[in-house]
Length: 470
Image 1 (tube, one colour):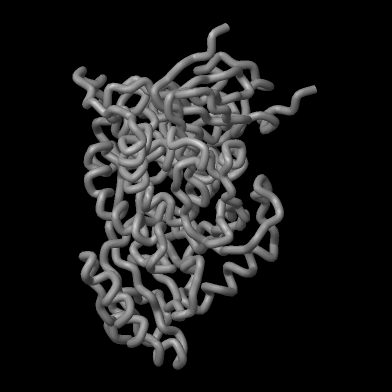
Image 2: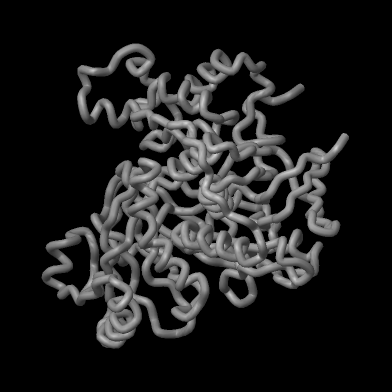
């Protein structure tokens, strides 16, 4: 059978690959997205906290510059896609006499670097800090305006749906194994056959270095584990973190992050790991995160969840976005770790510029794309007008997060094929009880709606069955 042919093939449906697909879909191109997981955003993008960063060391790095550019683009992105985003300041808190002594120097450095880029930097006295954040312990702080928290699950879903509506073809459960150059065509060998494309974007996350090496790339990934803790109550109004030292650093060290739906995240941590697949959280990981932040904020609410993500770090600790040494028709994105979410819109524009330089003709699509009417969740409808709830919206499956049967139906109709896919799209089970009262009901609803057998339902993909197979 003749391999399928496309103008551009994107390997990886994480947030970077989805943003590239979303922007390229505005042009008259045939585009395919190849993803080994069952749904979009199930790789590296699954394990972060949704923070839009401003400060990112090293300050002269590519990821720092792209984070600033991407941060500025998110207001447009949120309007365009109707994604929930909350702009809020970050407070870098001095908790000791030594940290208080270095605060003025850190303030001057940050002001020089970021004030000219449009981010307001100021010093907050101890008295004002207590007024702003009564739950935070500290002598003083540096306030940085321009941070944000975005519903990254909603963002991923809407990038996917908008790209698909413009004609992008998605191939899930399809792993890219090899790349071969044949004249002006790139052959992608996958677990489901060969695919041909004139240009290829390798945005394969933790597997991006392996694919890049197939066509001469020398980039290497050193995976790092990041553990995050979830509390069921709000603890701060701002993103709060310890004041950083001026030593060279590859990570900001995490912080206290208020989420739009009322919970609080502590973390992430940053530690080397020998496995790209192991996302297990151990007792020592939880203890390390608690020890790091327990003197910064008084704990409110219960610790209801701990989860981990694996960062595709490079030895240099920076993004690597470059043409393949063998052809400009392949662009490799290696090491897209934190702040990859923040930088993703800017990464997409950078890649499009590189494609144009490499010879791809970009003609704005003449046809009007299929219009998407974004549905308002039952949770939002209840907040606006409780008396207007009717039909399946009145069947509440998850009381904590007010997820209805209508929300689950909408998720399945728009691509959710796993339990995690429904959770990410609806916030099912993300409240205080962490699914104790709703996961079973959601599984029953999935069975009825998809008409699958119980043994065929999976949590996130292969070998994650919800019912044991005999």
